[in-house]
Image (cartoon, rainbow over all chains, first blue to last red):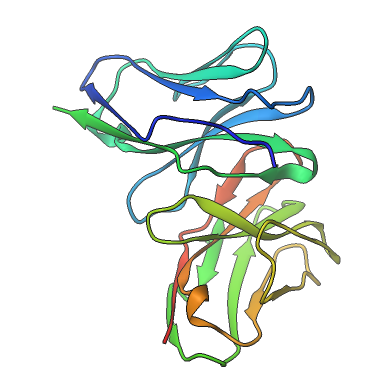
Amino acid sequence: DAKTTQPNSMESNEEEPVHLPCNHSTISGTDYIHWYRQLPSQGPEYVIHGLTSNVNNRMASLAIAEDRKSSTLILHRATLRDAAVYYCILETSGSRLTFGEGTQLTVNP
Amino acid sequence: DAGITQSPRYKITETGRQVTLMCHQTWSHSYMFWYRQDLGHGLRLIYYSAAADITDKGEVPDGYVVSRSKTENFPLTLESATRSQTSVYFCASSESAYNEQFFGPGTRLTVL
């Protein structure tokens, strides 16, 4: 299964931008890059996804490297409610998501 | 209620018993998924379904059985529960492949 590598944890201050990195050097041409987050005691929540081009939505931006071997999730202004585990996932054929261990984001007031 | 629901939310059972976890979605999404999440770890895919009567194995299917006779329901059965199946189980649905998945609230299963 396609694998991603993320830092175990990151910290940010409230109202500052956060850049969450993800490496996926084994990505294939048809794999989509997904980001989900999981708040404590809840199911994962979709954040954003993309294939080749950078993507923006109301929650975040996704910057994808030109060679697609890495990507960065950007939260433009972190809030306390953004504290969660963020998962970078490659979606391979058949709509399969393979979750890694994710990055625990701590937001300091 | 609209959305994706799971029942029961909490379940305690004993080794060797059969347990069925229910998942229901109201969006008529084609795809449905079952994941398990062990304490402190990421989710692992158990089974998924691309449409009614079509199911396929995920990463950790052993010990589990699924069926999907109706689009909106995707039950997961542990035929003979083991302590290693103690976990939180999440159901999810998606309109199509490569689309966002919507997750249910989870079922916390404890096997004694």
